[in-house]
Length: 362
Ligand code: F6P
Image (cartoon, rainbow, N blue to C red; front, top):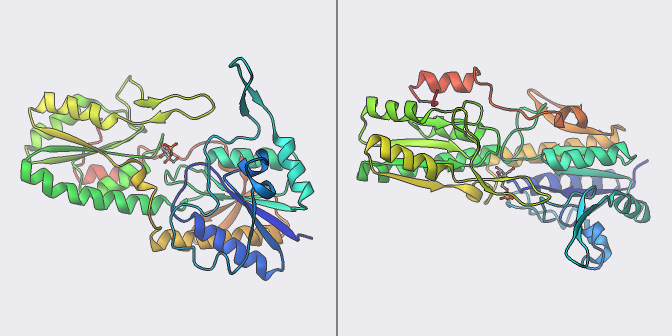
């Protein structure tokens, strides 16, 4: 029987995290369980000197009452805190990696925590699955603005990101038109083009570049020259790459995924040169992760949080909550993290874009 559960949030934040925390806390409290949040991924557990009570924060119906509409996460998050690969600097400057997973399991035993609700993207859910394999009772909740997790049609945060990106693109139309310019807008999404494709379609873009369809810059320039419109908007996913080329990388740091970024500048310079039209670039970046979740993401987060508790109550373990309309399903964590969910190059979204005469660079 479950008495005490923990919740953590890991990886990049996404609007709707607090809605999940609220619903899971309320649903678990109704069952008489005690709920604890872990500060900043697993940092509180791994770094007891800097986090009182191993970073455990008691969550009660009162403490989470008014948080579902807030962006960010009340627990904090990190995207370099893998307890299976903790980097430590030795005297003399050498950096080593240590597996500290046993410390996390010991903290769960010490605090009599019976289960973990891990809210995260592919990286955090991979860690959660490792803990599940080591015997911890775990239920995962899919979070990422990138919408790139298998087995769920939507992750919360994604629709907020698409809405805000669309609003930004809407605004760029008037200034682009006033100056008769090309505007290249870069959006996040990592290796998946969901945000770019849908914000680009909604925002009436002339061209959309996504990682799943390598682009030819000549074809984009040709499209712009042929249409000869007073101005044009090009939406570029940060992970888009030219045919035969590679992604544009901002930084590579040990123990972290490569940071993508810079494609808008690159494409803007090329298009200005090739079309002769004055061109500007805009990077939306972390603006897509900030701010309040739209109502759809609040509802999705609340639904996922309640479902995660229901999964634990039903005795499930090692599963992820998934939206498979019209139902919420529970899929093995291993299945959800096995591969990324990418935009199908012949799927409805791409076909719609082509029908709207939007150039995809191919
Ligand atoms: O995975 C979410 C995401 O926002 C990606 O779209 C983006 O590439 C990355 O995180 C940025 O991470 P960071 O916050 O470390 O810059």
